[in-house]
Length: 94
Image (cartoon, rainbow, N blue to C red; front, side, top):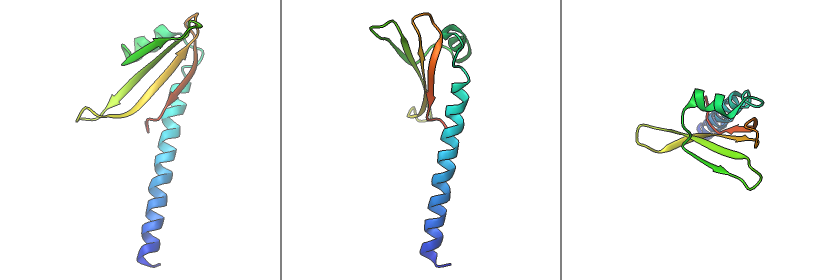
């Protein structure tokens, strides 16, 4: 295998590993769907930021930061007006 083919293969492998990692973080937060907003906050703490939509839903986000204070990934939850988690997303690899 030529050196350039090895570089391409290595790049593809890293990209696939990152995609797999992102999927696992997303799957982790989706387990909260159907739980209460208060149970998520009890587990994760106070969100980094949150907003209330016109229809009464709460959208709240947790930032995960590296040692330099840069956001590396996020968890975002949407709770119904009754406080039940309707959706959850993450781009975190864990």
